[in-house]
Amino acid sequence: MRARSFLSSVIYLAVLALSGCGGGGGGGGETPVTPVTVPPQATTLTGMASKGPIQAGTVKAFAVSFGAVDTSKPIGQGVTDGSGNYSLDIGQYKGPVMMEVTGGAFTDEVSGTTVTLKAPLRAIFANATTGKKTVAITPMTELAFRKAKGSGPLTTDTISNANSGVAATFGLKDIVSTLPVAGSAVADQKKYAAACGTFSQLVNSSMKTGESLDDALARVVTQMGDEQENGGRLSVDSINMINTAVSDFNSSGKNGTGSTIDPIPTPTSGLLKLSTAGTANVIAGIDMSINLPAGVIVDADPLTGVVTDGIVTISGVAAVGTRNVIVAKYTPASIGTPANLHIIMANGLGFNLGEFATIQFDLATGASFPAANAFSVTTFSAKGLNGAGLSGITAAPVSATGI
Image (tube, rainbow, N blue to C red; front, side):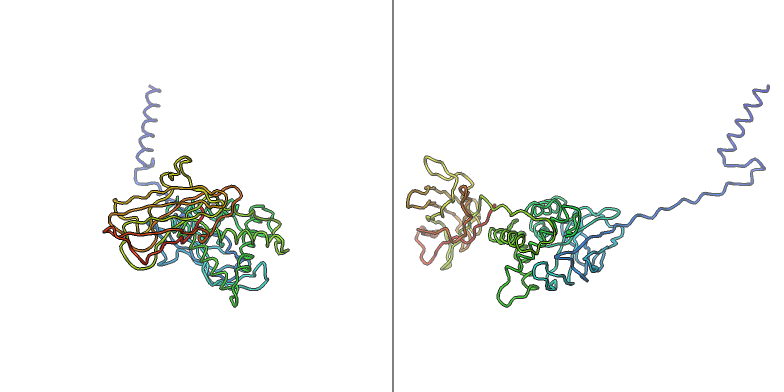
């Protein structure tokens, strides 16, 4: 009986506990517990705008959505301090962000003069997340932004590839999360600062007569940005200018970073674009020969000279329709005679004046990368849709870029 009574009491207490009732008459309830609401953590962007450190520059953050930068309204805004540092609260935003610094001024590392920032510098990255994110804004991140912009829609891949590609060009590990600090004990920060100093040397050396450093910086940044956006890479001329600046900056006594960057490797392959000009007409066929400068090689069958498929291609205005064909024969250089490329192409639909072909070439060991005018057209003729020859039309190489 005792066991049964004890068991009944336990069951009775359990029922009371589950029903939330007290033991005294059923009228009292437990005080409800108010849940604790934890506010979402904000995303903060901190970093440095530098070409040296840009003081009093306006920094804005813009969201990237649907593959493009939304510049209708910044998601955060601030001003750089005397050391170029900034901090922006962008709320709970997560995802790709484009940063932009405008205005402000900095002390040029080479000349020691004060330079006003006339063209914006931007940086883009793909992973704004909760908490703090470090973002540098420099000429290198501007080049990466332009490279990403020219790669199509702004996605995680195009943004990341552009940043890593420009970083590799200058021998840097990370151009976004690393800050360029000349007096740092961190090797990567000092090397980044040396890259910015080299850019200052480049701008000083590139000044035109009557041009200020302010305008020269805007021109050089825009020019190299155009190369990245339109061609995906720096031109050989730009690479040569940068490499000269590397040498000059390191020997100038102005490099106080304690670090240096290596020269950018020059391309060993390139693309030559050919274009027509002259009397407007519809062209259906072209027969031409072009001499190649010393050290330029075109991949072809060693016995027949027939150029490998994909080396000489129809491009530009001629790349229309499906009724087109292009063939080429390569003759290597011999004593006293330059290498030559004979090209025949046809397009049944016809095409107008402009770019019509692209030639991929390689360089022999030790050869310098050629300018477009180092290639010379030796023979040229064009025919119309009726097969008759066309007069008043010429062809010429218009650009040679490294790949």
